[in-house]
Length: 444
Image (cartoon, rainbow, N blue to C red; front, top):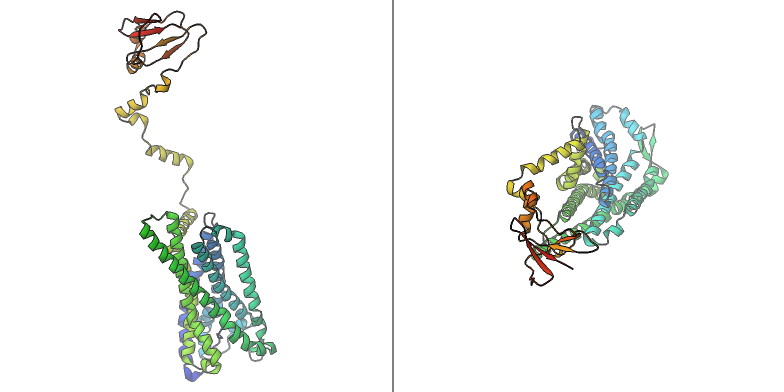
């Protein structure tokens, strides 16, 4: 990765490069970094909520947001504040104490470690989505929470081990107030900068992400055509998964595009180290390339908001809970709202009220059920109209006086259907009440 110190030849446009770095890294980079830090913090708070932290994709995105925050926290002092505070000193070629402090700190190894973790966490997210798209039935067994955490931890350990040579490459020289190569650094620098750095940081990740993206996009297109041919309706869950996949594909594309300028610059510097450092185009592309990485790490929050419906809903709930004037609805308020939406029984139309009050007609299986049991005899009563009899029993005392007297020794009464084909014989006695009702007494 190219050095940040202003080593451009004066004849090649040192003043232009310093002014360009002040505008791009100083002002634009500072605004984007502050926005990105706030956006990534909000992303972490949303993704660790109980409703969002259950999926492996959100766990990977949480780790990616943490790496983005660390990258931006290093970018602000190493790039933005460096040129905001020291631009005039660089122009007049005066010593800058803040730069000396940065040179004493191991910013380059930490910077490379975090940048590498961002790259491989992006690969992990894309692999996670590829498994969900290609093997939806086995995804829950493969992408468990434990497996996800082990993968994230492995990525960080790999990045730390890979960047150990950067800690041994340079040391600060107080006499020149510059960083110089150590004896180990002179030996390992060509290897770690050319033969290892470019393949590990750019070629392998780019090739992997390209293949994964092509496979995911092909699968999405095939699924869409299959649904159209079958005429199947898309459920809300499948639609949400579809948008999440599109979001991650967009994140990967933005990431690859932001890394392309630095890939070109590192390849250029590996082929022609001295010529690249003396080129105005090289330093201009370096300024733009670093800014693109800042844009990539700062704008993921916007992509999550654009494509993730559940992310937006959780974010709105989180903001409403923070607001001091917002109060959660109490149980009594919820019950009253529910009651206001429910139509009272007394406000129902007359016909609908009568349907609730009217007794249900007897079922055929109930026509021969007994109401009470007796030891000696059984009496069965049948009426011409059961509904009329029920209404007469519920109206007034006059109807009660008109009720028919039963036999004295009756201990069981059951209602039977009057339409049954009875033939009168010696065991059947037909009685007529004063109200015109007929009672059929069956003696057993």
